[in-house]
Length: 160
Image (cartoon, rainbow, N blue to C red; front, side):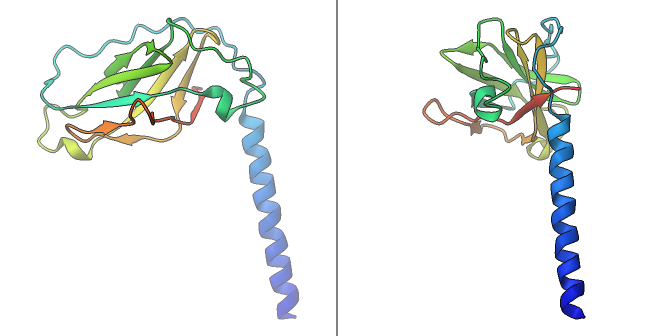
């Protein structure tokens, strides 16, 4: 009897995982093509630039979505930006396939800036669409995320 209950529990768990995975796949767009104009993101003028960090980032939609983004192309009109809520903390255009971001503190006017987080947003001029990083990053003064030889590669998803 206990064995049957255990077996049923295991089968139910497997079924739930499979249904959940199917729902995630259904959320993925058929194509990344959109009709979004290039954003005019701008870092706020009133930031104290004495608290900052840097990031070396490579956007790779092909690696993440080999079937849907097989035609992905990075070009000079693409932009990557760091955001805390709706406040832009840094912007970069690609240089030799990488984005070099200078990121100001998301809490320049607060005393404890090391615990603040931010998220990356990417505009693809090829797909005319916005993408956001799946995970947030933590701001740490005078630190660096990624290097030229080992850039940070965020998992990007279409911004809804």
